[in-house]
Image (tube, rainbow, N blue to C red):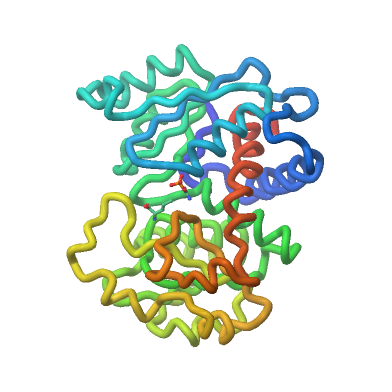
Length: 309
Ligand code: CP
Ligand code: NVA
């Protein structure tokens, strides 16, 4: 039987995502106040090891997956792309075959999405996408968990994405189609999300409006979300900042959105660019819970990948 990979949210599908989010809520609640390294009851992943490959920088993804494995009773190891043989040209396929003999699951963060697909095609253990240029599905699991904690119901919720239609935005749109919530993207011309992702959402009955006015889009939203204007691997030499400036999130934007609106950002933030200090540190910000929820969502994701959920 082929392993349960998580390259994108659609690999799991709506029912499994709902199960993952429900399990994450339960597990998070059950260990409230515990020391961070204490293992969950029954050590569900005792003896299991996750290999994490990084070809791009990371703080949250690296630490949250490591702590996820510890809390589930397993462990994780890190392979830095550049200092491994991948950095000297060993193929992704051969790396997948070899790692599958040592570890129980593989998480990879890289640039080209095709590399994650290639890894999954040749691994005999689950492969998890820890971010590519095209998508960041683990982040959106955490974001959905954060919404659920504060608003109870994901279906029918209204999300507005402001700024660059990037990898995180693509995964948010995919989630909207699978989990039946609304996303509006407000971005400048030339910064739209992936056309294929938009088409897939439309095929699932979820048309994603692409608009040019941030304030109008944000009115009445449950979530106002944004991200850096310059993702890893992008160059900021093409005046991105100038084009994206009207989509910055500030107090006026949040006030116009309404008191019900929470602010989300996957982090790292470029304070003073896509978001002001006042918003990210203000009462509508959910970013620290959102960052914490990477841990809780990924624990349940790992359990799903390994057939224990
Ligand atoms: N949000 C996120 O993926 O953070 P890192 O780049 O620090 O992993
Ligand atoms: N869009 C950002 C997300 C970082 C977690 C990037 O790709 O750099």
